[in-house]
Amino acid sequence: MPIAPISIVVSKSNYELSVYDAKGWYATYPVVFGNSSLEDKKMEGDRNTPEGTFRIVSKRVHEKWDRYMGLDYPTRETLEKFNDLKRRGIIPSSARPGGGIGIHGTWPHEDFVVDRYNNWTDGCISLKREDIEDLYTYVPIGTPITIRK
Image (cartoon, rainbow, N blue to C red; front, top):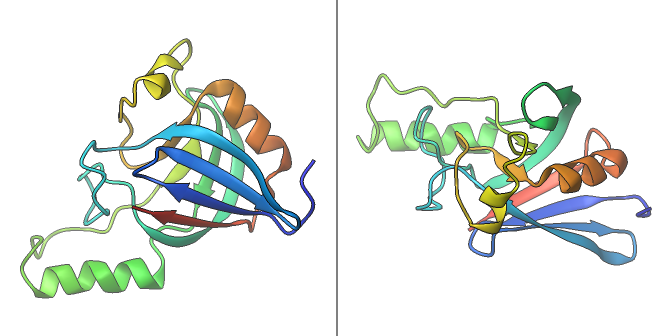
């Protein structure tokens, strides 16, 4: 088991979620995301995975995706980016920031999507079912997570 404090770093370009503890690197899991463009989330419905620093704010067993760990998206920082995009006319004035971003497993019997780098979520981070079950056992609510390109 890792030694607190624990933190998570997600590299979108490497398709990896890495866990660090008090001693340094602890584990790395392969992951997939929303859009294959790997762009930063701009608004609700764009299927992009947001970039920035977040915290895990909830954990639960999920009926479809095995385990789910919710993030505190949108944060003040991501809302500032969102409002700036609106002001500059890059996204519609009616756009909403979205929510419900988390880390979860795959559909039953579909771990192959991770092996194939098949980005299928609506902006979440998806791990193989065995990997999300492992991560879920030792990552507490409040854990910081950095998502970067």
